[in-house]
Image (tube, rainbow, N blue to C red):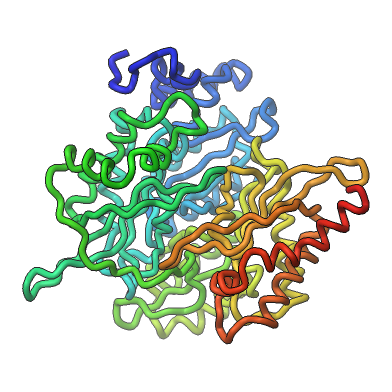
Length: 540
């Protein structure tokens, strides 16, 4: 027990004591043994440690099925890898395939017997699951358009790969207090959602006489879940070759000083909040050595992670096409067809977006018209309906042991119904999450829905609490929660009321975020009140 953070063994939470004896990475070696002995032979702590292999027990806990996350750094993938992912879902995952908000791919219905087979298949096409979950550095997210983006200052693919390889399977950082989420993006529209990551790099510039040098600014301590924190910007300018050094230093501070008494209070955001920006920056510089102070911020706004439509790349005569994947769910056949289009019309390049959508890259401009006529492209339209194309959902209780309500089917039906009832020319982002952990990113949505349970006519039913007005734009702020939970069956009516009020009262082209800021939260609480009062008067 020579780890620097073990100052008082008795103050460590129970799982920290397990990790002192069993490094999460060691579990990977045991998977072949589990394949022989079966699911029932895996004890509770070992099932939790399997997260380090990128797998997690899915609902119901004792049924013996797992979900698996595949790391796709910055969302960059090729058609061969896409086909492999599709075939795994087809052969081992009951044809279930989900894209995630961290640009990963998620399988369901795997068993302990099939997991080592799937991992071997993935490794052959340079795809990893190790570190996709667990108390370690997770998938490095970033700009899905890296390398082709007219709005990027630096092609970050090499930097993302360098950081990924440094942390991959690295025992120096395989026992952190909790998960550690990184984002690296040089896109001017905050493609990497910087403010909700533990560590994020955003585009910046410094003038050296007549020379302009591009690098990054640094954000630390962001995160969502039940207690969301906006990341704090440090007074640093980091050159591209310094990104890895800074990433290692921040992870080291988290490892050595992060909280290990209460797992609900163990993310980096709590340490940053307690230390403050100045102390954290001082401690960081003690590890990195001198770094330059911040330069010119090149962030212009926030695109919310959407890339729909046909757009010119920075390479002449090439375009990318952003596709809508409703709720991020694909069949194996869908992904295979999309991969074939990537080969037929481009060079096989695909990108996964943090909104659970896809991009086809490097398409010669003269082939765009033919591509758009493909049936699969029409099905996953580059020009989706305003609500269907801008609704995000977590897995919900279909697979997740923590979720209280069903989310995927609910969110799809909700978005489709709203599209039929209300016509808007400015998309509204609706995010649905099944529990307080906020895998559906409800705090950064125009309208967020958090699942809960409550009584209706004496019966326990699924309800939703509403939040409004989230954004990661220049004036980033989380959505504000309204008082009162609404039964799932009433959500459609409530949202229609909100959206019609927005449509009829806004300034031309006014965003929902600005609209909420102008009218105030109280106005929306008043709009919600009749629905809550109706339930209260009915004794529901």
